[in-house]
Length: 254
Image (tube, rainbow, N blue to C red; front, side):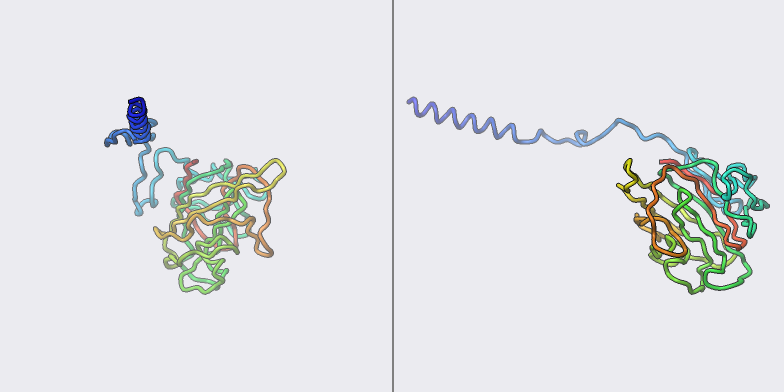
C-alpha cells in the first residue's frame, strides 16, 4: 500500500513538473507590444518640379535653396562657404575649396540631390566629379557615370577607392540624381583602437548600391585606408574643379 501511494505521488509530481514546463496558453494579445509608442514623423513629399523630395518633419535642413548659412569653407572650417547659390541650387565654384556643415553628426540618415553638368567635358574622373564625405572623412563618390568608363571603385555610388557600387544606377548628364544614405559612425576605445567600423547603406536614384557596407578607413586618392580615431564630424562636399550642383540636402540624426 505504501509503495502504491509513493508511486501515485511520483506520477502526480511528474505531471505537476511537466505542467510547469508547458508555456501558458498563447493568444494574439500575448505578443502585442503597446509601449513604447513610436513618435510621429510627417514624411516629406515628392515635388520634383520644385526641389525634389521635401524633408520629413524631424529633419535638419542643411540646404533649402536659399543660402549657405549652414555651411562653411572646408579650408578652415570657419569662413563663409564660397560656392554659388542661384535658382534654389548650390554649385561648386571651381578652385574655391570644399565646403562643410557647421554642425557635426554621428549616426544619421542623409538625403542629397546632385547634378553633373549637362555639357559633357572631360572623361573618366574628369566628368562632374565631386564627393560627399561622411563625418568629413569617408567619401561617397559623385561622378557622371553615364556611359563614362572609369575604375569601378571610383564611379558614382562607390565608397571611393574601396567598394564599387552593386550596380550603376546613374542617369544622364544634366539630370538630377538622389542619394539616400544610412550611416553609422565608428566607435573607438580610449587607446584609439576601432572597436566598431563605420557602415553605410546607399540608395542611388531609388536603387540599392551599397548594402550595409563596412568602410575600411579613410578614402585617399593615393594609398590604402587608414584608421584615424575621431568623434562626430561634418558633412563635407568636394570641390573637384567641376561645376557639379546640389539641392535639397537634409539629415536625420539617429
